[in-house]
Length: 154
Image (cartoon, rainbow, N blue to C red; front, side, top):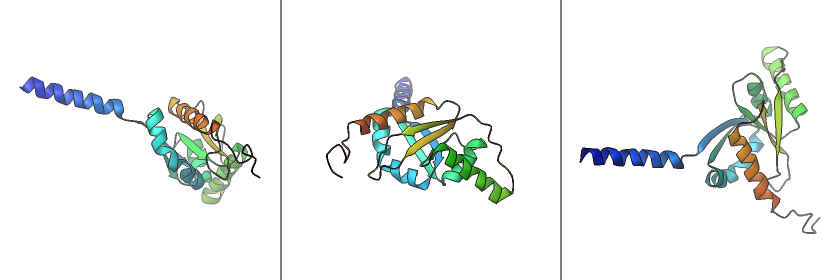
């Protein structure tokens, strides 16, 4: 009887870990948080990635990324603008010049909301596999979606 209980507990533990999503935490622009929020369930279901974006703003997300306090930043601006925002924040908060020699990788995402606003994930070095799965999922989901221009609307 004891062995059966242990086997049942072990099977339940293995089953729950097989269905657990890879938790992927990033900081980002507040607008990026709201753009990605409606897609969280589909992303988790299709890829096994649980993307959690903390809405701290582009400048804070980039500063934390460059200084190693977060693994990724989700931004709604070009890379140069996002880095400049981090420099301005470092100067205004601490009176220091940001040393940004980190090799940043800017991975654009498809436009996922009606505004068509740009969205990208920035990492130091190559993005982790979970981010690659996220980008692939969003690109596939929105490649098939018709745009207003393709439908003939202006």
